[in-house]
Length: 198
Image 1 (cartoon, one colour):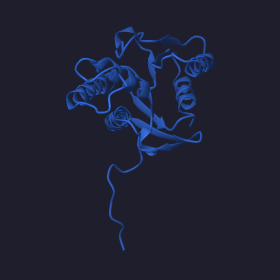
Image 2 (tube, one colour):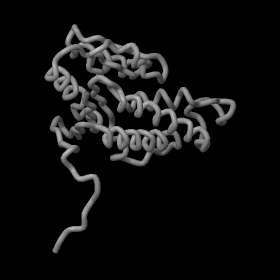
Image 3 (cartoon, one colour):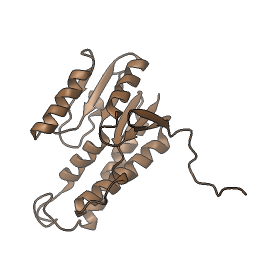
């Protein structure tokens, strides 16, 4: 069974490429989505993605920060779109307003215990994805390529997602970086840099 990771920036074409890859594989596809339609813009994006998928694909919209892997039909390819939204859910689920200085998103600092709990939960989730018996495509974001987030939770999100991406790509059978709708094969790239020869 294969694990494929597709990463890139916002609006780079990641989801479309992942969907095309799933169609290319053939067979049943189960799309797990973690985006929350709490505002009009996100609701429109979710609706657009849903409308672009083939009607015979099943959609899984887990509550909270659970992968719900047991709900994926046997033999179906799992298309998780996207890991960044899952990290957001994990961060919200692990937040304790009494222990962490107020409502989620309002604290000026991130307690070490909270950061460790988020990392541990993401470690377990990425390990479960990598160990899954069926074919899996994970769509994720490259959040560390832009401006350093101004808030502590934003910086933690960037760091947690970056480490989760590294773990998944290390276990992946194929990994692609999508830029402007074009794919760069990360699988073929070296895992470490080498000093240039004279």
